[in-house]
Length: 255
Image 1 (cartoon, rainbow, N blue to C red):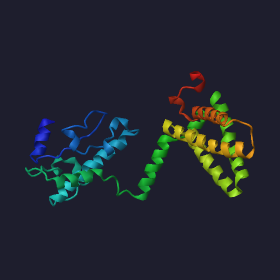
Image 2 (image 1 turned 135 degrees about the vertical axis):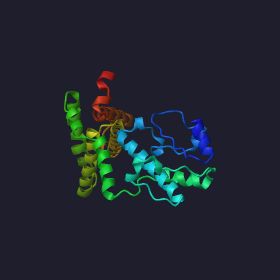
Image 3 (image 1 turned 60 degrees about the horizontal axis):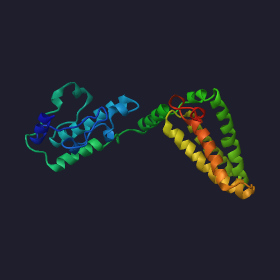
Image 4 (image 1 turned 60 degrees about the vertical axis):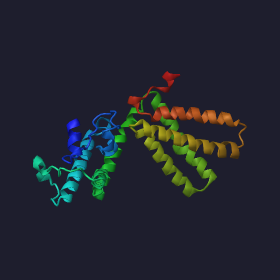
């Protein structure tokens, strides 16, 4: 590393840190360089590591192209990459700050030239990595099946019905679609983040509906704090349903 820094200071090299695993690198002398992959996210923490390596290769190509362009050279093509000669040494003089900024911008530029089809493929890949209908099958066994049945009725039937009594049929249909998609996110997710998001969203929805409809409209003689406690306990059970089966401890075991 000391030799690389000396070559960099002499204008004979450009340094790009590649972060493979979480490490304490954000301090002198490496903190002044823009690292790869994107946002310096360590390769070992990517869900699909091939995407991290692809991001690194594209970042390197952008820098090399920027350097070659500044020297009047041609862009690097896939056919050129078999030879190390495409990366020629920089002139032996310190790079000006403007050049460093331009190379950092080249690193920060991220797939802006992708087509709509490629972006849709990335979205589809992201959905496939985080959601699966196979997760529903894992929630149809034992206590999870009971929770799935109960919350399907509460979220897909009872909630839209309360909304319909409160508003009109159009808003009821829209709410049914929204509640259905939110519930689908909860029961098909593979990550804990989506599970917590869906559970918190339903907690807020049920709290609002409970305050307005259950107490305000039906005039139930139920203390407000008891309503909050009941909704909170139901939300914990719903979170138990939504959490990925391979990452969770059953709520009943905790009790």
